[in-house]
Length: 422
Image (cartoon, rainbow, N blue to C red; front, side, top):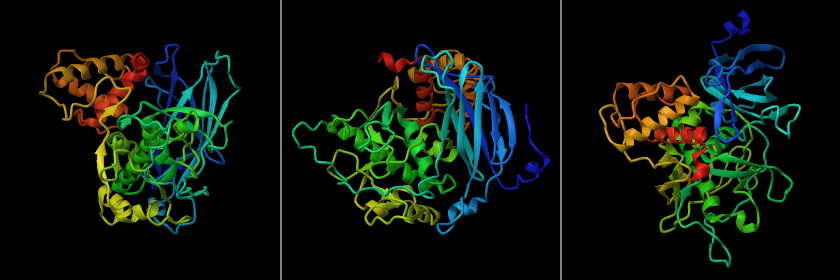
């Protein structure tokens, strides 16, 4: 059922869109979409729309009112440059989920993934309530406590990894390192970066600004991973969600299409100092409420991006003498990207891998058509890739570049839980 007033439709001259996705874990640990979940969307005063999720566990693209896009580009703008909504997900088979503070920006698609818990779970709650706070460039958050940008690993007992790798998951401690009672969340690496970027910057900013901030988030996180910073302090997590120590992170928050696309492409890119193996601890601040000489400022990166600088130029402007690298290994994926785009006319083992993954994914996402597993990238494979790309918010060009390759691997692992066997 769809409820939408004529008055609301008349106000769509400015606004954004929202898609809600519902999924759950099976007994084997694999992830599957959940159709037929009743989704209601409301603002502070009224119900706006109601839907049931479709065969891939998603609502249609819902248009929603939001302030002018220009409002989020002004450092001196004091009002909230986005709209907030409450989303409720209800099904007889799952614990109800209520998400408050879902953010919608003009010209941007917001994506709200909801992970549902079956009602027969022993630890069942009456309902799960998630409250999304404002982005750090708008809200009031603790400033970062300065640290050495490169960690000394000479101390007795200090453990580091043998190489810089992208982990399958990071474990996020939802509190400061001094709060041992705060919960931990196990989050896929790319999902973590998307969550942090969506929690900190505005998705309306220039793409190169978003890219610069994503690379800074990746570099910082990989420093924590590489040096096993918190584990060397006797902790059981990778990183915290305290802005005084690490990054903002909100479990269950919505992300944005512009940020998601950049993360899918550059999740393995980081910066380091010449002659140093470990990723740079790329500390930064907002540059409005907090100043941080020698670090990147988020509002400063926005201005440089709007002035036409590339992400590489933005990062070098703030961090000076740095090198850009790509992590050599990506944990949790069956095979690494071969290093070239795969498209119609290609043949070989990489094509067969794509076809086999598509066919398994289609069992959980039946909109994606099955294809012959013959190692030949023909029209049927191209069409299946285009459908896959549309379902997972990638550019539907039918070409398997790095972003599509790793998204295929990510979804394949999720629906098969193959990583637990590796």
